[in-house]
Image (cartoon, rainbow, N blue to C red; front, top):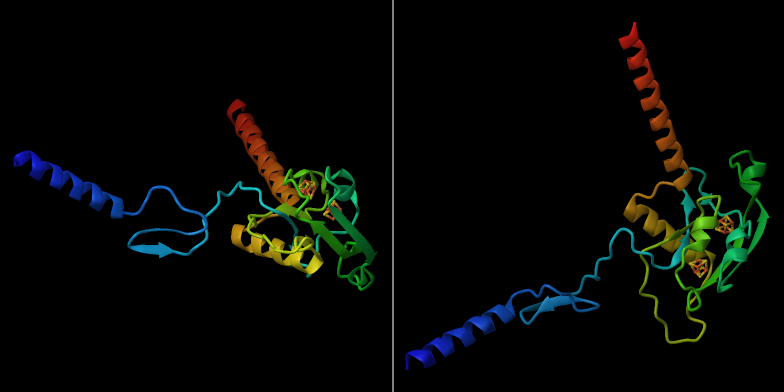
Length: 191
Ligand code: SF4
Ligand code: SF4
């Protein structure tokens, strides 16, 4: 009798444990028997999703000059672009003589290697957190300039993105200041 009751209690406890929120998440949403949460599965900061183009809020134009470096280095040749003379440069508002006119990435062929980001000298392309872009059509994953800029700008805002060249320069300046302060302190001590 007592063993039967123990068994019942054990079963009840196991059942109750099964109702709590699970440790793992079920893609694409999470939750348990008592309720489902439909928020997207979060990704880590370093997660590399699809590449997209960045937007220069200061000048109000894309960073991309369509220099073709990333396109030549892309191992799957899934990118293409064209350039045009930059009207904002002619008006004296932008340092970019040329600016991207069209850009396309076939995300079906992209292997998310990040080489395009590594080779870009203009901070113009980033590996975003975007990864849910399945489509039912063969060419549905070809994305053009407006979509690439929209994805890139969303990533910039969500992550507080700072252009890598600006970040590197700020770090260099800080190192220089620290070295200068250390030198001044050493000189003051020796006097
Ligand atoms: S993303 Fe960078 S490397 Fe690629 S075309 Fe634009 S400026 Fe050039
Ligand atoms: S991540 Fe790699 S495969 Fe994808 S567009 Fe960039 S260079 Fe090409």
